[in-house]
Amino acid sequence: MNQTTLFVCALCRFSPTEKSRQGVSGGEHLIAQLRTQLAARNLSSVVQLEPLRCMAACSQPCNVSVAAPGKLTYILSGVAAAEDAATVAEFCAQYSDSHDGRVPYRDRAAAIRQATAFVLPPLSVQA
Image (cartoon, rainbow, N blue to C red; front, side, top):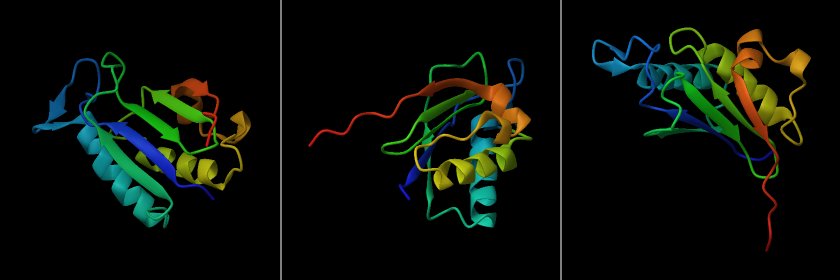
């Protein structure tokens, strides 16, 4: 099983009209919730959470990417900072368990299906 990396934009807003709550951005809130959810599922050693300063999709918060060597890369946009951490953590478990990153559409939670903006092929590894 390859190490899965979960990239999360720390600067994302809660919504297009709500930048932060009590000084905490939507992305920062989502990151904190994801840490809790990954730990609760014993995924902290399998999924590396990587906060990023910007994923250049500011009009559609929150933005997340799930990637691993030799696997498909999923780019999610419109992840709800206050509601979707458990769903993203579950998707990470499905992704990590897959051989090539393919998580069948029917097996993804509705929030993940809706937020999936792009699925990219694996990068080729050259020695």
